[in-house]
Length: 411
Image (cartoon, rainbow, N blue to C red; front, side, top):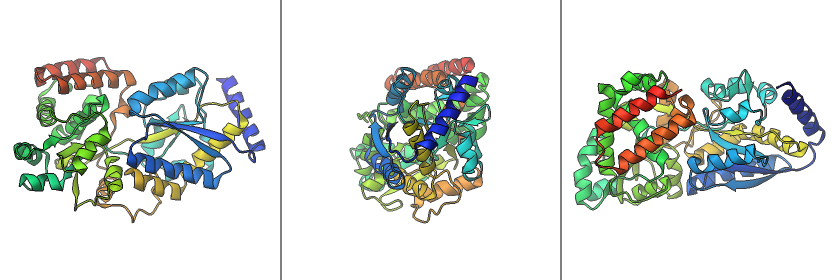
């Protein structure tokens, strides 16, 4: 560790000595949908306009489950990028412990990240042994049900206000030729939907007992049984949703082919690109309209250790640019997420984003599973929910038994 400290200190000095020299900064991420591409373009524009460095885009399609192993393989294999996306939480934990990620404690102190990043837990998630290793850039919440006004109008039923009303409207939607619930085939989508159902149906305390305390008895108990029954209803409603990517499922809602979708607030970017207006063309129900809380997760950027002082200088510049007030506003308005800075003007936020801000201000939040579970545990849960949603013969009771066993062995 002492040699790593010396190396990083030397790299920092060299970076400042060569600050006038431009570097090409390869930034890897998994943002490839229309809304995501529009958002990440704001980062690239700000970086190139505010520094003398160049942004080299390294997008990988397929979501984090596809991209993360590629990122990790490159870093551990000696071919690091300039900067790379991970979610808030424990995804980069082993890379940090191996000394492969840069320490940004000095820059964080200089720019007062501890005061401007909110909630503070996001910066805590970047901190290992008192040192800051990443830049949190947004707050994303999974806890949303997006509803197509056109689909319900065509079906002749009112737009639902709660999950139960949504489930009750499913037969009318099917009769009108609609898919009640749009859901893609990527594993993280089924897991994400299930994890939205937990605090909505069983409540915040149950959610925390299962994922934070790893209480297998609660995971096998009656409150979670209600969640599995709701998941059973969800898989029946999504049975004819034959798409793969999350944004393809969102498009089914945008075009009125599906009644709704359980998806994070990044879906707002797709509605925005399509020119749709919240409250007019679509509705959003935080906490599925049952329990209005939001999960606090999102994205962070890590910067692999580099031997090139020009790349190190570019990393310093990019980290600073990403947290600049104007960059935070421009990026997050297009991404559908909320800035991590609490001191920026969000008057341009739409109705759905304002709902999220109000809930956040009240403190009605839960941490995302990636902040509480290891990648191994999340992978096991992903596999279980993919099987459950694709196997009608698997009963909710069977799935819950396996779920409790995963929680019992989780670390």
